[in-house]
Length: 312
Image (cartoon, rainbow, N blue to C red; front, top):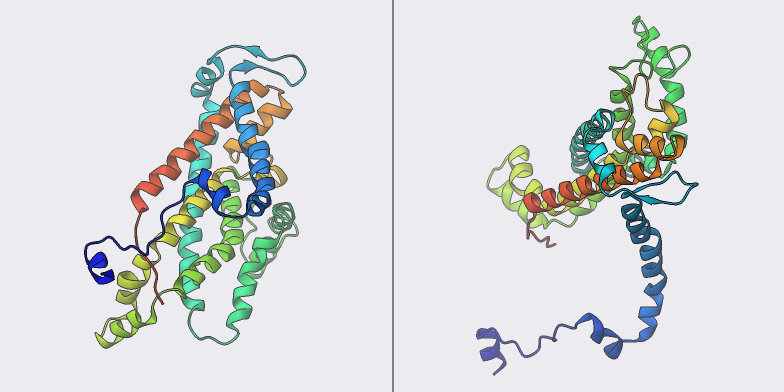
């Protein structure tokens, strides 16, 4: 009878799917109490500020006087604000370059450190170390290294008999200099993520590829990369969200200069809100940035959605 039910696709041993409001009746209410603080935190400190910013974006507010409703004037002002549009374009450029370089290098390092190497764990720890360091500390260290008078970059240039190249004071090199820091800091985190995904792939697939005479490059493109696709989707979405919110390194190292060459969207929003005290307009800019991030995330989910499963 059980075999007949399985054949007909009506397996009687399968448990019915529970709805959310049925959970307290079937499971301990203690579990709900455990996650309650997290839900409250999420509503108060995540959803709450977004709703408040949305309300403020339709007002003229300077943090001191009472909000004055002005409709969609802030949004009309935003789409005609050349400085904001340039800063948004700069943030997108920063995100594309940093995400592409970070994930490419992370996958290569993950594949390399998945092999049997001497001191492999030491290398993994060395690459992961920058991930746990504060952005402020990292920014101060790299600002010192970039110093054209006594920084490490200048010292290496002297050894190579090259004239020291100013980085943070150059309109062409300041943003690329900050991109290098973003790539260097994020590589370790995503390398660990890809390494965990690689170790979940069935080794029999690689053994079959070796028997068929596949080269390491073909094995990577036909087995490793397709099976890394779900992890790659996660990494792309997370790193895109993170890079579009780049702020600390710009604040510590350049304050948006020189000549607005490193003025990214988040720093422009911060400057509008707390230097110019135009909180209503800054809220509208923040909502626009949120919409951009959501659209990019949905776009990635649409193009990278997959039902690939690991087995080991």
